[in-house]
Image 1 (cartoon, rainbow, N blue to C red):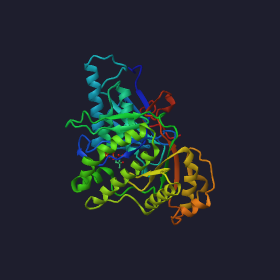
Image 2: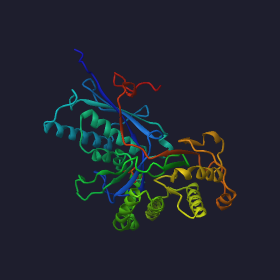
Image 3: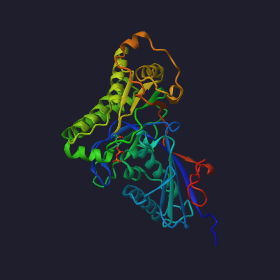
Image 4: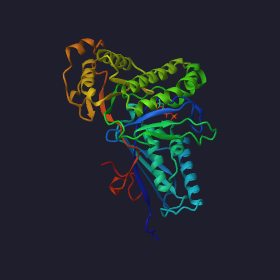
Length: 400
Ligand code: DP6
């Protein structure tokens, strides 16, 4: 007999985050516990987001997952850890006698479909948005209301920071079981409305060395990384929190650049060395410092993760001039009209003084395109049934 509700589905979206105090290195590989705390800015989902549908039905015979329309191996250890953890929290909730919000059984299998609205290969932090979205969708599905840091973190460390909007810290914690290694909002997305984020996409190639393997080698071989985690990051976390709270762009920008540089220095101190920056990345660094020197203050700040793309912070009134400077140093090759995506940026001419001050050889095509965005909110539930990525049969809907 067909049941009334053969399938229960939830669809959520989650944001990408960019760290301004970097996470690099684990003290526990299995639980994904970091050697230092980190702090990030959540980017707006209008420009970058993951959408995930999770569904359960008594008719499903196995757990299954589709990423960007392709079925993937559901047996991956990190995915399994997330599923185990959310089911454990759901069981805990039931045994605590809470009311059951959905007519479903924990023994039912789950189908998951997830898509990004940005190219996965662009080297942007898709795993953070992806696992945060998965954790959020599963929590809704199972009626779990507790902290989801552990569920997301077991997928990818940086994912726990994508569970909140605005400015977010991931406290490293001290406990061996990781219960105190959690993400927490430092300030909401409305806190600093003038702050803008420009993603300078340098290369869409797949990165050479993934974060997981890279940081493992760094922990094993870099004494600079150990020094950083123990003696540098604690004070930087406090200072960055102050800069955010006081909306001190000079302080925020300088510390963001220093921390990115120190992270890349630990990569070079790793043996064999790891190098994520390209010649274009280094030219962007030079451009930012020339731009700031010309203005006599920190107007723009870069940060780089485990890849060559730059993420640049600036206040809204600086963006048009900085974008003009990027165009000057990296003349768009063929896509002049598609060079700028996301938030609109008013075109302005570069002053002759700034042109002369930009001591960077023009590299045509070095920057493929720019995504202009801002600080944004945390994960969202999509109530519209049309938004589900899985059809009533539990299989991905054909892409529209
Ligand atoms: C350079 O979170 O991708 O982006 O925990 O092994 O999945 P795993 O690593 P991941 O590392 C991100 C490193 C970083 C810095 C940061 O986001 O803090």
